[in-house]
Image 1 (cartoon, rainbow, N blue to C red):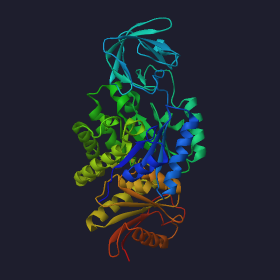
Image 2: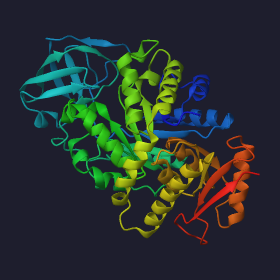
Image 3: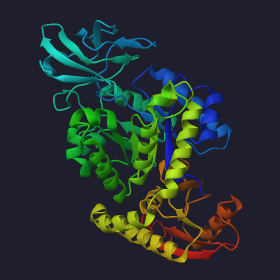
Length: 478
């Protein structure tokens, strides 16, 4: 069976040539991520157009996710070559300075000196380098390097989020977002979300008319307001770097499980991110601990796993994706579908609220899962304009493939992040039962099912203009 868990790969200087992008597609990349915290907007737009052009040229429905910088505080640039901050050294933090070196660290946050206090521990980048603030003066702060290591580029500087006086999204986020909405981007990740209000402030049209909004969970406030954020967002990213710094690494595994469970029970895809295969930035193989980490994220039910620096600046991006694909495919085989489905049946009722269309779709997708499992169908064919029906079925993690048809091209690309889903374009919206039969034939002709197979077909075709999923058919493939 094909791999069910999706792979998000970050495109950067090591991977943004057309040839490498093509090889990443062949290796198993399902979604391409463009981080906007580094480089110029013009460079990011060129990167986006290159990715889209390669995918179109090869007939691939590749989703593209742009990750907004958000109010994250970053150090001034160390340049492209690694610089070492040595344990025990003392450094000076200077707000407004554009560059950094081993002795003086520029910080792009004007309010820094009012938001940090002596004794604070500040994490650099993913937390592998930590600083302890010793004094705060009129124009700078002094800190001790508690734990040193290499840094490069413009790494983040983690300051407790409850002190930051910057809202998310920032004006710069919205400026960047406008440019990518004009390009037709599929998904946008919002950094340092604290509440559902932050998600709504992004102001784009609801997906699929606009991009699917991915809320990054990386602050204490986001964990406290998780239910509302999941409801407001289209998907969730567990950004484990800042989340671990904010709440403590001992809390991280338990938070990861809880966030994954709550997202999937609500029919929202969830991405597990940060340091998945960190050693593969320079090494040809991941560590045993990293492999176990990825497998356990899959056993927990994650929809997708994300590679960051491994593919953006790593020595062998294609190998990183290929290795992740093998590990994920093997973990998929061991995923306990029965136990997961039982858990979701207990949780799902609280996730749909009072919306009548959502409740109907919820009931129909649950019925489809039961019927498909009992009948041992070859595939579940979901027909949906928005992708909601597909995601509703995917949360049960069925043992058979999900084939998601939509007449909207953007929906098809957005479904590239949905667990276990092969997304295909339908010729038109489903307003009659005849199209359901046509799409069964289309799935057969594409090689996803065979003549004689039994399939379950789920669609919103019972009432013309229906927003809910209200028709389930079990059909034999001609």
